[in-house]
Image: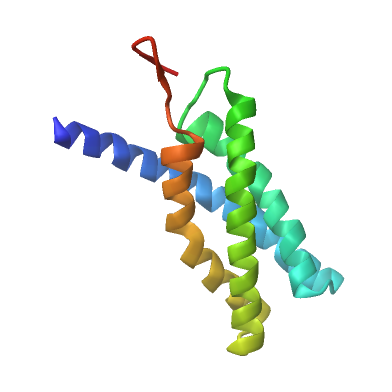
Length: 140
């Protein structure tokens, strides 16, 4: 039985990775556009790009990765905002530290920071934000 539980986890992780690729494309595309083309300061570009990525992330994870299909979108969105706030603060601190402290280019600092927060985000997303609640013997 544990094997089938592992298969479910792997399937979720594959969908999470696919959703993550789309989210990263939005986040990093907006970041590069704002920072390199428009000339917006890297932390301001990070705020806007991470916000665009967050909306993309929530919708993909709600409908595709974890296929919730229930009526708990508001509760899950509230939890997602809490996760996003912590994740955003952590990634912003890391981006700033890598750029200012380690003299990385802004894009390299952002890539490094986002890689470090990836597993934290997945764990919290799966086990808290999109956790299937059990009520009256049925998962929701």
